[in-house]
Length: 497
Image (tube, rainbow, N blue to C red; front, top):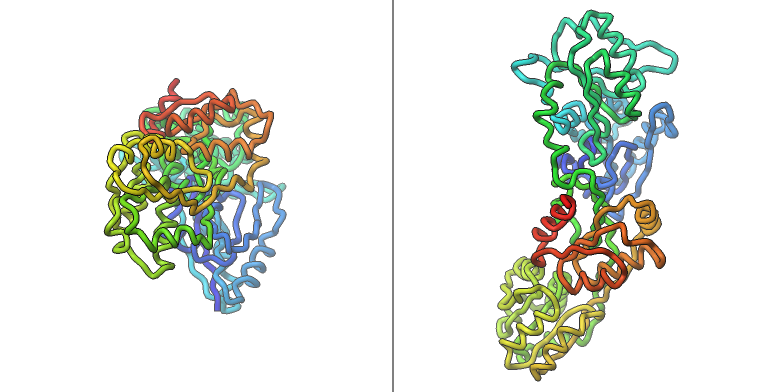
């Protein structure tokens, strides 16, 4: 029998999804998700899993709660794992308890994975600690939601007597009534207060004011849900403690074009610095299978002095080929290994293999020159079908014998092409990271001909990549070295002007 797992997706920042929540997603056969779940978290859903969107907007419930409950019962009654993915925490005004009642009555197994609530996380990202010994000794989380045509059912007098920090969720439309209720119950109009819109995401905004002035300030700023309202002395600390708005890439829209299987590390670095990251893997590496030429070469490695790899993908495909042939690392004992850069070297190291050669500049031309300076015997190149001719040209100049074996091909495709084209045309993209000439070509294939690329900046990992971008009219900045650390630093420098 299957089961249903209620998973709290957190307030928006994908880094705030718990480890247990991520593990639940990884085993899901079906995912039923809400509007407030971050797109970056939805990207973690396995390709095999079926998705069911039951998103609800304020005042608009295209899928009523009773229907959501029925969907969970129907899907959970089969032999599959159903993940119910909810923004924030499922049990904090998330109606998670209602969803479990029907499952419990019908004997469907279920679990609950708590999530980080926006009631704490959104204020924290806005520089507001919800408790502080100098200001309060309690925290109160209140729903600001009210049924259409009905008044708020809140004991404002009791909240005023508690003298703690007040956090109202789902209260944007009721903000004037909330503030008026607190003032009528005797709260000082000069009490610090704030509204945090889209907390923990790159679109976060904080509007600070006194309790008396907050409704007018929020209306002038056209605050929309999701947002949390915070009232209490701790709000006075926001300017001093606001770390999120000071992040160097705050407000920058950055496109990551690396292949999906290798995009995560760079994406994480950029998000940690405040960027709004769009993962648009414009290329896909596909192994050539069967590949008799590679198997022939690997079966006669005694012919070669050096084996050179030009990408982490090549290292992985090499290892997969060895395993298919019933071999392991011992098969490479008699050959020296060359890697185009540290990323490829790390991929080798993941299989217990150490690169004997990494050029000082991580590109095909310098790899060829480094091999020409050290090699005396035949070189085996395992790389993409579209590999740079600069590598073989360097070997030919040194009169070295080589076999250039294509073991994978690079395809240019992205299911989100239309969205990316529109973002570029509307100047909603600031920076695009390019880690190879192939990613530049893939990006161009995605956005199409005729797009004005002069208003974006390409952050390039090397000169060969930059040259490809310049040919297309993209202004570029080149990282000081071909590493993700340097690429990230280059993006920060560019953002600072």
